Amino acid sequence: MSLSEILTQCRSGNDKLRKEAENRLDQMGMADFGKLLEECSKVLADESSVKENRQLCATLIKNMILYQPKHQGKWEQLNQDLKFSIKNYVISCLASNVKDVRKAAAITVAGILKINL
Image (cartoon, rainbow, N blue to C red; front, side):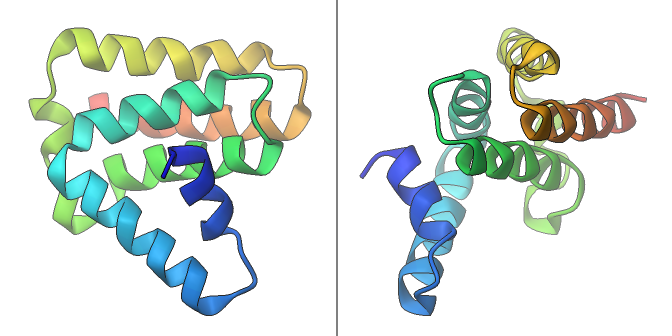
């Protein structure tokens, strides 16, 4: 199942589907934190992706870096090239054609700056 499909299920009104999708994201983050962040940053930067999925990716990136105890300290341990790539994708969204995506990206940029300071 693709990340976009999982994200769509995370927004589902069906509790069972949503919980399964959230568990998949959790497993993906535990298995390869950096890869999930990079995939989310690519979806966020993809102007052809669904707006709500893009916004969800911005929130996921920010929350995984800042607020989820199980991922605490993982951002600092990522390879510098991977962090640079993620940052570039997120920053590129500040020029998005979609206002809600620009706003979500700006909040994520602020989160990344907070953790780097």
